[in-house]
Length: 183
Image (tube, rainbow, N blue to C red; front, side, top):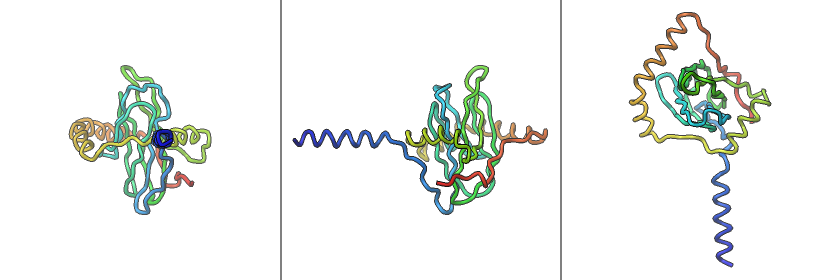
């Protein structure tokens, strides 16, 4: 009898650990931005995610990053074969979503960042499905420091590309502070 109870308890723990985190509230003094890749297309290709000159994550395949940041303006961008940028204005205590869309590239998959209006129930359904099924991707602070140092040239070139396109009058996708999620 004890073996069966132990086995049942182990199976319950295993099944609970495979359940996603779901949407967790934003701290009162921070904004939260979920970067979600909801497609398996290009599953082996890493996308790197940045807040201006700060790397905050990288992962391949379907998944997401829950990124806490200070309220205010941000330049979020991602890198794969290309670089794509989102200008953002976020408020403390609010939750936002950016979809990382896999695009056909020349050599490998490209990335396109799309801020999401949480009222778009069709898009949000797929996004929430990923968040509810999976744990967020994460890196330790030490790994982020090491990778940020390794990405120094990438960051410099990425921000240079942003400034160059901005000077040419290119307009970027915007994540507005009104595009927050209400549970």
